[in-house]
Each structure stands twice: as structure tokens, then as C-alpha cells.
Length: 397
Image (tube, rainbow, N blue to C red):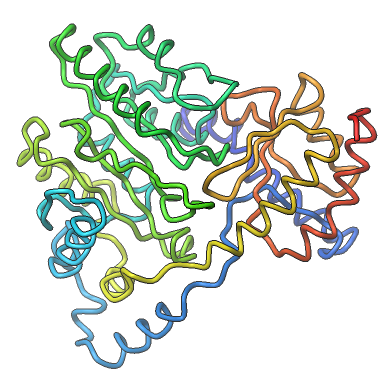
């Protein structure tokens, strides 16, 4: 029999993945072209041409043992050096390759961080709405996730509530900006206030509290919005980054962790991150795509593809009577459901071949998530279904 913990995880498997699987079944009945699957955040924009070019050039130019062999658990030194220089140039952060660990995407990176800092019984705080897998990542290390209630007016971090939730057991506070599922970008003033709060709480409890910023959507921002870089706002800060969205490489699982040099026990922490990377079974980040990243640091997907999708769908939802904060980044909309039971609402949407994810999956019931990282044509064809859904729930036009 499988482990008890795995039995509960299987029973409560991701609502996002479950909806994705249901979409495949629906497509077999009504045809894939008639299913409007907005469940999974799978990038639809093509990777930049530079990625394919880099792959071909690496395979033809670089020694086979370099491309496919083992390297330091941190990742290739030359690649980390280029990334560090890029971060210095863009954000002014005082780091070198010694601050960086290449990881198996952002999810792998978060697990490496948690393995490094968490003891059984520790608590990690995050702000609703949040990416549901955070809870599982914490439980991997016998720690718990504490969720700070959402500020439903803005979906900015609710710092007033956060102060009440931090205890002597709090080991880390985790943020995600641009946010999945809202697309909200956390404001610099709010983040600096959070940093001051954490400093005060460290002093109050005599403990070390880490700030972990999960940033796979950093490069997806619209309308000139600037995304604050938190690394040097607070001494005990990790930033986890992934190229899954910036380069449309979700399946390649390539990213990194960067740590503030002023972190408590910095050298020991970096050594522990290296060991965690190995013993969690990753050993190292994918070799070929480390080499690719080293050549593609200035490449980006065309975010206007997602902006065009956002603008069309957001405007139509507002015209249908839905209430929604206009996202500034990522590729999600998070409208308010017209009934309190968001799961029932998403089930009703299936009648119109719409696959949506209940907000309760993100710790924020009464809302639903739409992943608009799909073809523009599919979004256009889905508008009539959204109109019918709005009519069923008597939303005003």
C-alpha cells in the first residue's frame, strides 16, 4: 500500500490538473476545436528563435561531455556568471555566480530552498490567493503552510493581517509576483513595508525569517508596469526564477535560485542549497538547457501575444457583467464568481465547454481563474460561451 501521506495527496490531487484531464475527455466527445480550455498555465507563445538557434549551435560546437555531462551541483560556473551579470545590469544587485544555484525550474528551486531552511513544525506564510502546490511543497518537509487572507479590494499582500499571523514558528514568508492566479503585480511600497515588518518580527522573536519570492512570471508584464526586485530589500531573501514563461520552456524545467549575500550564514546556506539540489534527486539542473540559457539571456517571448488575449477577454467579461481586477502581468484573469460556490459555477461553465478553475483551489473561494495563454482565435470563439454563462447567472450587460 502507498504511503499514508501520498494517499491524501492523491485524493486531493490538483484541481488544475484534474480540469486539464477533463478537457481531454471533453475534446474526444465534442472535438478539440469546440473545447475552451482555460485551466492550465501552459505557455502558448512560441519560444524565441534564439532558443532553437542556441540548441543547434551548442550541439554542433560544444564538447559532448560538456553538453551532456555532470557539473557542479550549483550548475555551470560560466552560465551562473552570465546570469549574475545580467541581474546586476538590470537591477543593480550586488551578486556574483556564488549567489546562484541552477535549479529544475521554479518548483524544484522552492523545494531546494525548503529542504535547506525548514525543520519539522516550522511554518511558511503566504498570501491568498496563492499557487496551490505551495502547501504540498511545505508538507514535503513536515512543515506547514499558513495562508494570510486576501485583500479582496486589490489582491496586494494583506500586511495588517500578516502581522497577526507571524509567530515564533514562522520560518519564511513567500510571495508570488506577478501573481498566479490574479496577475496582480505587488507594489514596491508594499514590499518594502513587508521587509520592515519581517525585520521587526525577527527582533521580536529572536528568530531568522526568510523572504522567498517566487517569480516565474517576472518577464510577463503589460502597459509599462515595472516589477520591483526584492532581493536587496531584505537581508534573508531568496528569489526563485524560472525560464518556463519568459522563454516558453515550461517542459524543460530550467531556472535558478539567487540569495542575498547579507543572508544569515550565507556561505553555509549556499553549501546547503547545493547539497539539497543533489539529495532531493535533481543532482543538477538540465545540462543542455543550462547551456542554452547562457546564450539566450536577452531573448524573450513576445508578451504582446498575451496582452492581446488579455485585452479581448477582459473587456468581454466586463461587458458581460463579471467583476475582475485587470491583471498587470502573468497570463491569468481572476474574476469574481456570480455565486458563492465557485466549484458549482465552474461545473456550470462546462455546459458551454468552458474549463475554468475554482478560486478555492488558490485559497480564495468565490472566484475563478482563467488562463488566457491560448490561441487568440480560440479566445474569440469562446466569447459566445462566456456570454451564455453570464446570461445563465443573470449578470447585467
